[in-house]
Length: 275
Image (cartoon, rainbow, N blue to C red):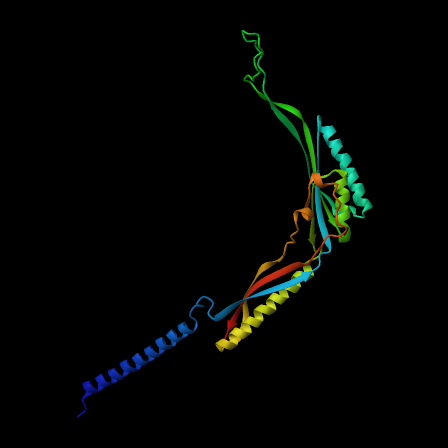
């Protein structure tokens, strides 16, 4: 005689056991998948990021010089005419030194009133013993217009850098103010910037290959690329080469100022997918 209820219970136990096994396998696969993508859940893949650096050196081929012209006078027109006179002499000098018009630029020009604070002297008195008392100021001082200052600032790009010393000496002899420079630079840096960037990318790739080999993984596609920019390094010179004061305008300038080299750098960060 077959025990029907007992047979049904055995079938139920088997079904429950199969369900538990399937559920356990599902969660095991899920946990393993999450573990493999730990730290990259948003992207759904594993990755590594490496930075690269590139440097390119080049001799500067231009020099930037700037100067200003300041003149005081009783009227605006007189001040402006005085500035124009010095400006013409400066432009004639630059032309004689073969500086093209396109390389001369007026950066700013202005004129400003000049005031002086004046106080009223009180009437002097005589003391009882006949001595004149010292003069002193009474109240009621005020600002009084005394004249005008005209100002102009000019920048110059010198393409024949070997002549920059003579050019600055000639400008100083004319009587300009705040003559500064030379700031040596490279006129067209685009090709050098691209060269520095390529070096930085190659550097990052080489580092990524070494790291992937050590980790026992393979590099995949590039996930992201960040370029921090390319910057030419500044050139530093002593005060004598960077600024000519009004007291030193008559001092002889060196025939040729040292240019050295400019360094253009590039820094990149590349993120690679790993498999």
